[in-house]
Image (cartoon, rainbow, N blue to C red; front, side):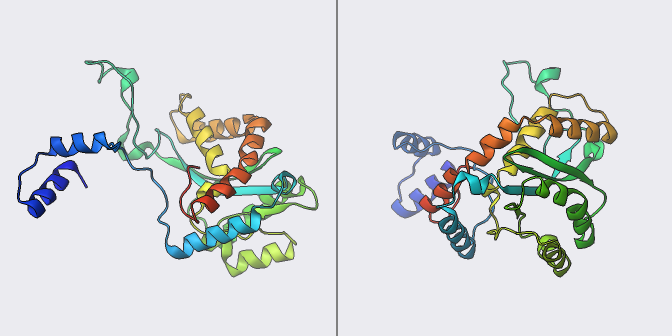
Length: 258
């Protein structure tokens, strides 16, 4: 609720007028400040229960286990910046300087969809998705890009993907079984448990430093930045898995800072 809404409700209950400024000052005195809310998936009780069960099952796993996991995900990369809200640090009167504006183009400038995978050993294959991906397209990606990356992790390798309908379809499930791929059971609505989500963020921030004017250049730069990602970066992200699992347990299956 806004300070004005709270003021109106207080006045309605107590009968005495109170200003929004008084509400804000009182909230500040008890340590509450207006902030932009973190964007997180909507967690229903069943999601929290599944997340907690996952964390309980994985809390005893050592780094040798996590180092043999191949993490995967799809993401959209925009030609001109992200879909989210950005802020700039500027002085009065600088709002229209080139360095202080966010370039926009008509119709958004386009974007690319990519599928990628990573492990503690570094980035794996990256594949661009043409059009809308269905289960058959996803299976092609698994055969062409996932399997080579998974094999490099050895016989104990475990494959992770989320519960997108394409990932859990009969076609995909049958293929993974045929290829004898060990698949990690995954709780829905849990991007905070997948280290590749943070890798996407790192790559996208790198892209903001590049001058790209069309989709073809974007594809080239995305692939270049992906391959350039240091192994140490991937290793550090995977090393955070015990802490991520612990955070889920501490929050009873709820949201974490990751």
